Length: 386
Image (cartoon, rainbow, N blue to C red):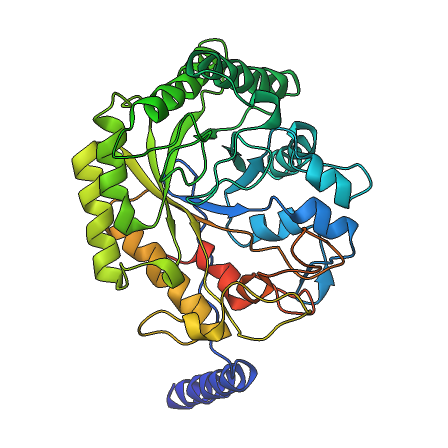
């Protein structure tokens, strides 16, 4: 019996020794995948179709793969996509292709849906970029009165959703406007001297169109209203809700450390909690990013540099991953319901966006300069504390 136990003990030691030698590297934690309704792990992939047509290639573990499939495999459960009204300026740069009109956006939505991901349709109500400094009225709507502009917003929003319904591509979320800190559809809908009335009327037209559409749709899109930077959100939300805009589901926020005065994770958590309590809405960060390098892959100057690091974080592959894990946990701990990364696949290519050729964002991407996935992509499948 004693000899038998000795033999067992020796065998166990040999086996353990073999395992230890074989597994010198620590095992990676198992991935955790979330339903988008529980917590939205989103990625804005608006640029992908154009990047691919101009030579961009995406790889995972060195293998060329479909970028939508890559994102899904690493935990993404939603795709955000921008919609411009009639971006003829894009067509002028791309042999007639507009990419970000309804028909270009349709391609992105289909690719997301084919991977089983939800969609956030970000309607800019402009022919070009809409943000706090730019909210240009589409050329087709120039010089319209407020009443006619309200009808245009309603009819356009409804037509977009009806078209997507005819293709079985109804988005699960709809953003009525993009970074509308100072209103939308300028000059009519511009917020000046703290007057929110016209802007509120235009928002309510878009909201009403989504709600009316939902009455005959099995997919009933959640409505997101969007403001840039957490330090601006309370004044903006007070302005719209005080002017009669109350029928929305999600307060959407942009959070970029470069432009934020809300810098610590504790502050972010507390802001999210305060917004949820004050307005009784879900809260999501619908745009964010963090750099992994200060270098360039092309001659197009990057928007965010190595000097734009967040307090307590460096600009590196591991700190990009760490920052996104910590930010996601802060949002969850504050009661938020989602995070969406802006343009993680805008890698360098021959794409000409009107300001440069390549990408001004490749140092914030989920891919290195050879197109391979970076550690940050796994922040979406990390095991968080709810």
